[in-house]
Image (cartoon, rainbow, N blue to C red; front, side, top):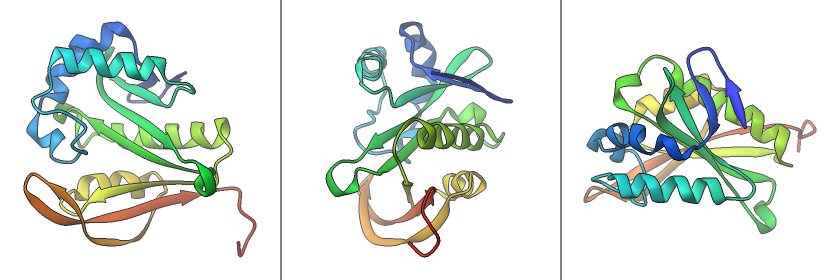
Length: 176
């Protein structure tokens, strides 16, 4: 997949993205807002492993956010199963040098639209740590609505904090 947008390109990960993501990913401020599966420090070996994983996934649900020709972040979907099979979770990160420029919002909008077209989804959601208002704004600008606060639901960096649930739905009849 490749989506050419105004400020960035969202596309499948490429092997040559390995070196470009390390300086963006190896940032405590980035790590602080992501799940612990995202390593810190972030090494070249971590980048290689991630790109191999993302490129081998079927269907492809993890994409690079490319700014100025170089991978500067990532965005992806976790497709749910069983009774949640028409739902997915979206997650994203962007290198600090590119924060505050509308790039993440653009990428979230594009991947959300792609997900609703490519998969039989009626809901996409995201959980945001309570200390991360920037990601809340990204989701709101991309059309997601805040659904609630999950009290003391996340432990990160030695602190147990709230997270906020955001979601967007499509394809449901009124009242359903």
